[in-house]
Length: 339
Image (cartoon, rainbow, N blue to C red; front, side):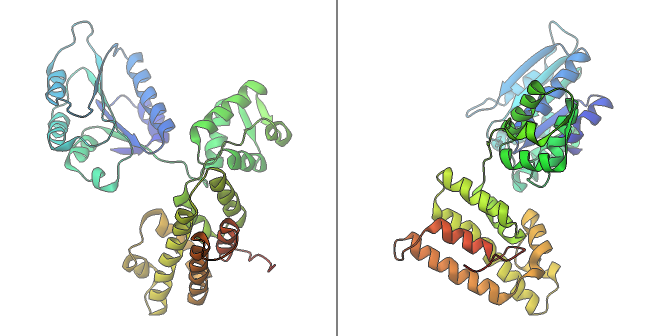
């Protein structure tokens, strides 16, 4: 059974499973999930803990021996296996499949993995673990979901904030969930329980936002001009390479262009997305916004991108970051006024 990390507390209330597999791309949520599982197990008398770390050249027979061995000092124990690279290999994969089919008694097993791509999640060893217990996915908290996440964390410490204040905090902590967690905790130390005001928060929360260049394309297509400007300013301050930033934006524009060309040829949007090989979150963004754009708009944007490429290479004069912002603003929901 697979659940998102936010559903783990409810699952634990229903009772401990014999096996938990924690994985995902959000370290804070993965750490919290593992901590909750350990705390629940200890509360129910699983007092002994054994930890195995499957690094390079790990002897997978150790897992088999640990599963078969009986505790010398306690009736119940926690067996924890960490696979830092998420790649057990052929031998490890077979060992995990066998382990999932024959779980040890009087033991709660916790397997901790990093982010896994779709191929790894389809691997036989992972499917065996998923079927044998509970797979807890620590998904990245998107910007759109961050205000609700912040509101939940504030609620846990008997505080609350209005939408404007939550949006302000979101801008300050986006892309850095661990820092967001620390900033929320700081608010509990600085202010009493109850409603927080904007004035209280604006001087208390540090600007710790971090931006991923690969999120730029979705922001451009969504047409959020203010967020785009903030992202580009943040990436510039972090020393991001302009060629990579240009590629991220232009690649999304080209993908949108392929979809529009297929739609113009008579394909329904859903079919056009499939034929253009666009899936996942990228599909959702283009699906929501594709009808706002035209092929001539895409062609003009790609010509602009080519000019920026020349500028970055020193073949033209100008500020690359200014032009990258202008390129993104071509897709703003409310077009910017001409200079």
